Length: 163
Image (cartoon, rainbow, N blue to C red; front, side, top):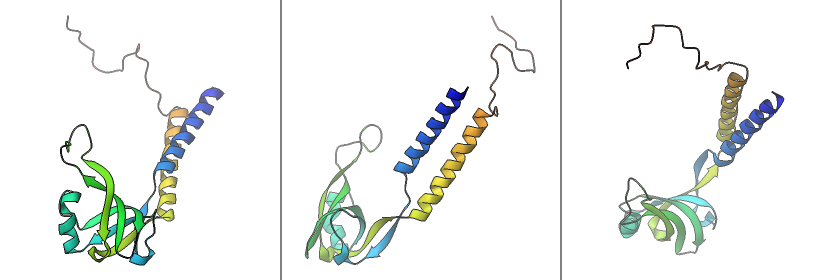
């Protein structure tokens, strides 16, 4: 009995740890183009000429490009971003997207927003998930989910067996 409870608590804590480790709530905050440095995740809003120039690479006209900054200079920004690929199915097996480097000229960028972890929302989400896992744990291990014995049919109308 104690070993079962210890295993259940361990599994619950492990599940909670996995959820918290892979989940986070993010927001975007405007930053000046000069503040963009390699390694940060950004969302860039393109100008009309930038949209036209990158249309084929992005798989259609996209005003917003998201990705991780690889390098910057006074004339261009290189992003590692998802781009649509030709020949792969959009439904079914395979992904229609790949990540590749996109070079965007500085004059083609209208604005830049940095992706930042929102600690308040992430903490709130973690608390809600913890509470839900706690309720499930209590429900199952205090007898709330009793199940039934397959040898004892549920009361009700008689079952008719057809040969």
